[in-house]
Length: 241
Ligand code: NDP
Image (cartoon, rainbow, N blue to C red; front, top):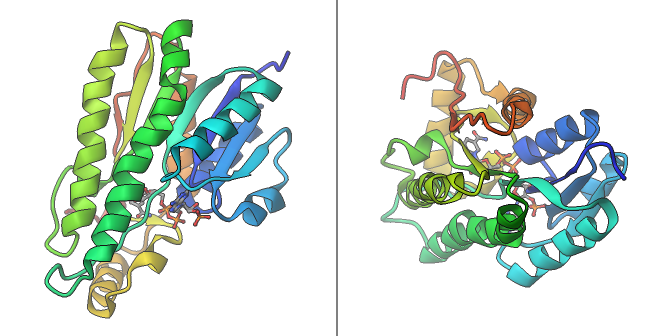
């Protein structure tokens, strides 16, 4: 029997997801790492990790990866529904294909991820579901239109699930970061929006290291099961909006 339970992370190949996988692994947990770039996760070589090429748009792929990791390491006690992308843009110029992509990955992908573990956690009357939102899930920005929509969606889902799962002793944490230093800007295809974002970020003195966000998620998880950190909001000190 593993001394610490299995945890699962989507979007574990870079940024906040990878930092969170590393943090839980360092704390002694076997980690199921899911993303499309499996070689990057395998290169981490985290002890007892299970790395699976999963696109969060594919419900069956998430279910299969979770079932496989649970067969090896026992039930997942935490899942971080983190995978996402930010196709920030001037909405009048944006290709609607980018709307579809964000809605399918950031919004529906979170539901697919939660669904893979929720019933098991309810049956065991324990578990922690961590849902990635954003500061853009609390306020709107003119060049974040559909991205904000997806993050308001995950925020609302997290709040609703928290109420639904409270009576089952399953915790729901929503994470709402401001500017974090990751590969997220690689998803911005609109050059003007990218330039404006970079200029604002420079004014803030840059983003926060992803490991700090991961540390807060681990600390929230390590609270006693009857104590819930409902939301983590982490921004650069100079980020005022
Ligand atoms: P990164 O680009 O570094 O990481 C994004 C991760 O999501 C990658 O591991 C990527 O893996 C994965 N991913 C993207 N699409 C899919 C998919 N279809 N299926 C499976 N995995 C996918 O950026 P971040 O770490 O910043 O992003 C993580 C989350 O944090 C996102 O939801 C983002 O919106 C949110 N966020 C980020 C902030 C920031 O400032 N960085 C602020 C607020 C929220 P792969 O490509 O290998 O599949």
